Image 1: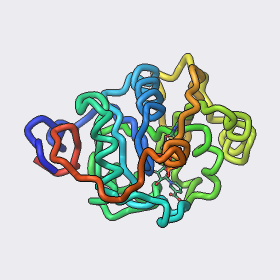
Image 2: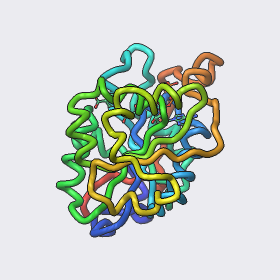
Image 3: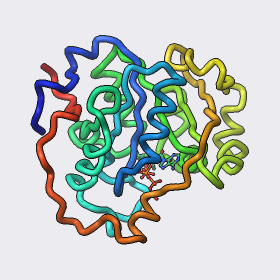
Image 4: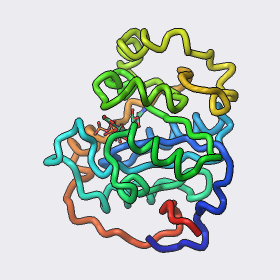
Length: 222
Ligand SMILES: Nc1ncnc2c1ncn2[C@@H]1O[C@H](COP(=O)(O)OP(=O)(O)OP(=O)(O)O)[C@@H](O)[C@H]1O
Ligand SMILES: O=C(O)c1ccc[n+]([C@@H]2O[C@H](COP(=O)([O-])O)[C@@H](O)[C@H]2O)c1
């Protein structure tokens, strides 16, 4: 990816608090930006990385636009400063979040990562590979999503993690706490989804360009 002069590199990442918003971004939309900004402020993060999944193991590849097109949709929304697009999961060669987290923590040992997810993702967590190991490795912040919050908070993950939940008013501490630890950040909810955008014909032609951009994080060491 181009524009390396203006992007953060591993040299900048000796320490810091990074929120990881993993997603298919098929395509990225304003709901992603809203949760990223909410997390940035509430958790006092230095950055949120929009980490484009090479392929969600739980989603059909047939309805997925090419990686480059999904990454491009993120690049169009982020500022490249506080909100950063990254292809690092593809570069690491991981698909399962637990594997990605272990590799990122090894690669950036002084960075405090927080996994960001909408309530729908938290509800499906018990079906993820190694989910208990994952929650023992990284703090989690769960963002509300219309129609998903009860299912998430009262489901298997919510019950398993009940003792490790901290109130939203203490969210600024989350990145510094030793997992398992998580919080639910109530706030304005946005009903937008990538599914509704695709259903309205807004994405998925599969032939979008991948323009060079400085608004990205490639994970390359400087
Ligand atoms: N409107 C929203 N409100 C809260 N969280 C959201 C919202 N949209 C997406 N997210 C969260 O962002 C992350 C990436 O989402 P994803 O790229 O799958 O978008 P999506 O709109 O959920 O896509 P799809 O409709 O295709 O499932 C997930 O953790 C998801 O829960
Ligand atoms: O690790 C898993 O088993 C796993 C299963 C489902 C989803 N995930 C991750 O959850 C994030 C959100 O995925 P998505 O497709 O709902 O945007 C993305 O980073 C996926 O790789 C991870």
